[in-house]
Length: 246
Image 1 (spheres, helix red, strand yellow):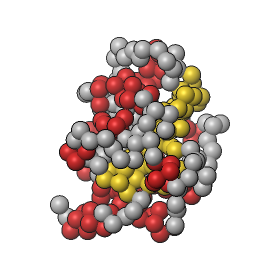
Image 2 (spheres, rainbow, N blue to C red):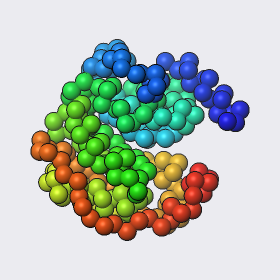
Image 3 (cartoon, rainbow, N blue to C red):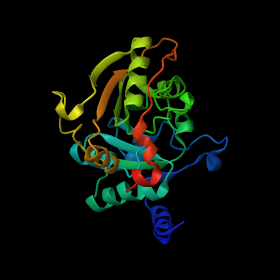
């Protein structure tokens, strides 16, 4: 691990707006902020919006700056990446944004029923080989339903055509309410200041001519079904990790 990453790991430990609780530390203990995020972490009763797989946390930080009456919480397991958004929030004095370093697979252990108002999934790994790891699979949607308020919106912003088509099939099969749907966000009529926020990775995809897709939907109370369809895989991801992190 590089010295820069080690320095960020050490620095992030002192950030009061960053909570670190990966699976190996949480174990079977009840999370101390579950049901208390508003009162004990944010110190207000404003709505809570999660950004899952937030990476460098740019989206959460920019949303918090735009909407001071909403609490934003970015979630990712990579502490060195979270440092960027956490440091931005600290520098700008943003009190309505925080970060949680943990495994998204256990996200339902951190929040009480109806504690979260909305969820953003910004450029998640499409996990083309393993359905259960996709952040819009039935396994994850069932987790979200445990703490998402009724009528709470899930937003998916993605470069992946595979992720977009898979999620769209999920929505149609389960008859979720569709709020927005576009396969080319930046040429659509729904583009606004919120959707126009560009993350580090999004700028990479756009520079390569890849169109950004966006879906917004609400869950229902039925038993979720997994779509059984063949979807063409994203060929460009064969560029590999080094190309993705340029």
